[in-house]
Image (cartoon, rainbow, N blue to C red; front, side, top):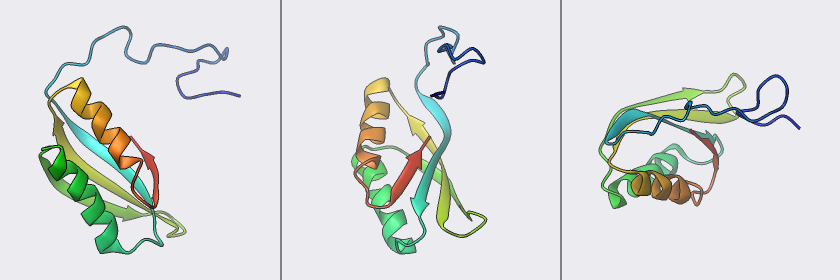
Length: 102
């Protein structure tokens, strides 16, 4: 099975070309959620985690999928270090209705 980061020969490629991520890092966090979860609940759950981890967030954008089964959230965040990044993604996994994060 081909996985994210595999090249055309099925071998894993280094997506960062051995470059180290430099912190603090500001980027658009993408969170895909199940549209069946109430709008306020989705946003409050994500905001709660960002607040708990003291992660500044700006420019919230949401977009429905073509069939409106999923909601995509794009949030500009600033991450201070690798530990905070790891904790963010681990905590996001615990939210009911989270399908995917990037």
